Amino acid sequence: MRALILLLIFGFCSHPVRAAEVTDLYEAEVAVSGQGRTERHQAIRAALAEVLVKVSGNEQVALLPGIPQLLDESLQFLQQYRYRTEAVATGETAPAEPRQWLWLRFNQGGLDKALRKVNVPIWGRTRPSTLLWLAVEKQGNRHLLGSGDESELLAGISSLAKRRAIPLVLPLLDLEDKQHIKATDVWINFEDNIRKASARYDNEAILVGRLLELGKGRWQGRWNLNLDGKLYGW
Image (tube, rainbow, N blue to C red; front, side):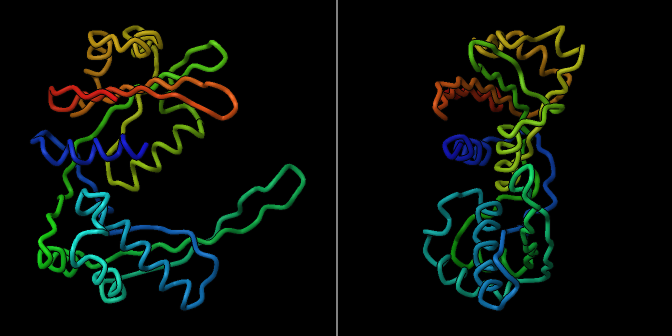
């Protein structure tokens, strides 16, 4: 998934395509162990590091000259924060355990000015949206995953895309989709059928994924990205 996100980020930055607007570029939410001052300061720094990746479009931004000092001064960019608590189930009989999160918003003007000062490019709010066709094979059975599936796999992919501010669209897999595309089409990357099924969504990029369960918690993935008419595979 790191390779996927890197390709999407650097590919999008270099291609002038239609885009969707991202509204939470300067926001992040991180898990915390408490509400003490030390925990909060550590969370602010971690959250700013996430925001810098989203704003710059560079996953290695923390290694660039001037950025470590900027992270050390993260408090001066903080605009707003709040805590929230959620219950996390630990088992069928054990009671749910509370988990705390800290949501933070940073000052856009101040942060943009600081990035320009150290010559770090800023990737704007408008970003290409990506339609994901994902076929999964488990125990010899292949199926597609779409917006109606409560899949841990999809949840992980969607969460990662959100953390990188990449608009991700999942197909409905309704009757209209099923008339144009099958799991086999995605598995063999049948471009004609994929293109026809994707037309109704009008997205700028089409990502095709094939995941094969190898057993014992191991998976093998193959990916193809159609971005502004250019094809990438890995």
